[in-house]
Image (cartoon, rainbow, N blue to C red; front, top):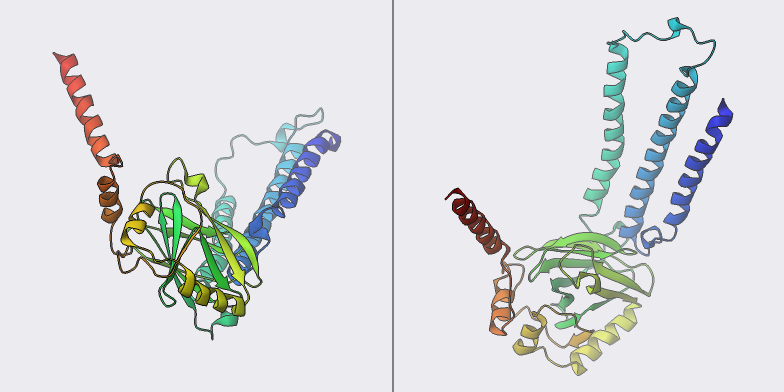
Length: 316
């Protein structure tokens, strides 16, 4: 009888190996910072735990199928269709899910609280504060202490905690650097804090992982980690040589379009604070430049009004 189940068991085993083997190709399983490493460990713990549950379920499933299969020597006494209550079973299938939820919840909650602050290894170092602002479809990074600003790339020193203050000028987005850490939502009129750190120099892919429109797939940025001496030199060169960010130039960044990398020797924080502004600044700028905008609430009202008018006409 077991021969009949060998192809099924082999398929399930192969699928599990395929899924685990494919995990190594994803960047979240190749962390380059303590935050990403902590998140990777939590993901792997969850995967192994769920695989263990899956194996138990398959074993029980196989046992039931084999034991209660229709066979020549099957005895009617082996099967009782009138069974409708078992206190032991009901206690068991109530306790087991509770244990599973607890086993997954405790490490998850611990990680969530741990990631609220800077990484423990470098908590003694002063974090670099960077405001990360999303605007359809680009990322704007402001360094208030250094008084510089970049677009579609952010440069940081290795082994130094970075405090990102994430917000948005328009659409709700999600800030994510898979090999460094994330994700954290950015919303107009709000600021969400996210501590990250790179353990080694390199260029890592950053992105918006929340759907925000037709060019959302191009809303990416480079997360560049360098040695601290190189970072200090870059800051000094930027302050001295980069052009200033004018209000007119920043208004152009509010238009819904993709742009390349840019560097400025001042920030937009003196022009507008998107952490307080609820998106009206970007809307006014787009109206100023004649960009047609669709108000979803107005569309819903118009649709409801049209449906009501159509129903009224049909009645008459």
